[in-house]
Image (cartoon, rainbow, N blue to C red; front, side, top):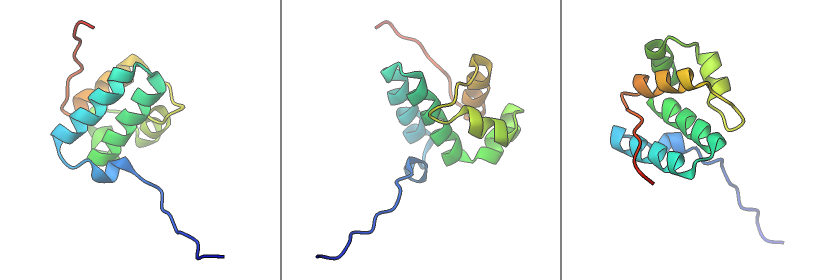
Length: 96
């Protein structure tokens, strides 16, 4: 038997360094139309920016953010908007 390959979990938050990268990541999630993907992506971007900072700017607790912004989370629209604003981003609509 050959040696085992050691793997580590991939965390996209570690690779999102600039506001532009974060915006592209979130935009791609929004394009899917899948609420689970969008919530998870918003959580990744919030972690990349710093969950403590986002909690302070949004007025929400870190615990509630972690709970709402996971793949099986279901954040309310008000929570989503507060987080997006805390990230310094805007949600935009365009014709399909």
